[in-house]
Length: 319
Image (cartoon, rainbow, N blue to C red; front, side, top):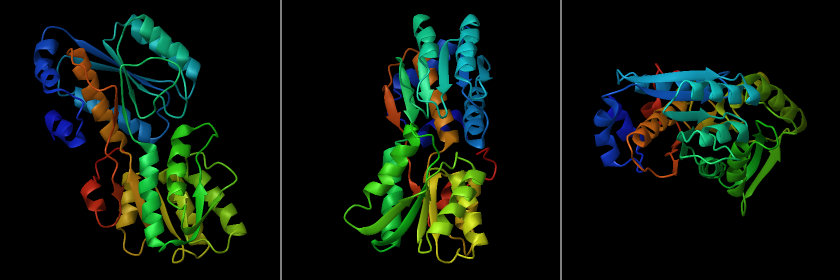
């Protein structure tokens, strides 16, 4: 798909046509440097976002992406920002992963008067030019609606959280799900520990939940990876025909599982890191071209089930 095809697919209303038309003029005379700052490239989600930015940039011979990996260390992220400032980048794209704030890094960029586009995580503690990402509360509400409807308004649902306690992305998703249980006979039981956003963590939390709750009907996990682990624990316990699962992200492994005949994987809320990365690149380019896009843009996040999963499945996706 072409760059402009990708742009249409992301449906970013905040990108003005004038900015798009200005790209060739703005980009023709000199190299444009984009600083892609990643807190971590630990996981397929963040790798996919970084790869999407680079792929979009490949359509331009004079656009260079300088990508960093702080390996989860906020101090390293700040150092990476300083290194990129010394290389005179024209715009930053920041993927903050699981942290809530990086004030020193944002302050350094703001002092240098370089635009900042945040993707996925909206960091606190500093000004920014634009943000593109998911509405996590709305995704949770969509999954909550799915669970309530599938349970016909009554049942017991386990919730597996990623953690830590101050992770607003996870809490927004779970709060959205639980809000849809109000006024129904759907009961939520929350796992006492953290699944740490991994399949192993989801497996361990699910084993603990199963040992204490013999009457579960469904499971919600704050991301796909944890639910893939939970699914294995449910299968090992011989309860795959009694408990269905739902989550958030829409990674290809999950879509494949949703499409598998006889699967108990019911739904996931789309939070595509590929879509976010491409949208972040387009937003950054519009800003470099002199455009004034919306400050905050929440991307569409449809609920994916067996009825529509094939539309989103791409076996070549890095996520």
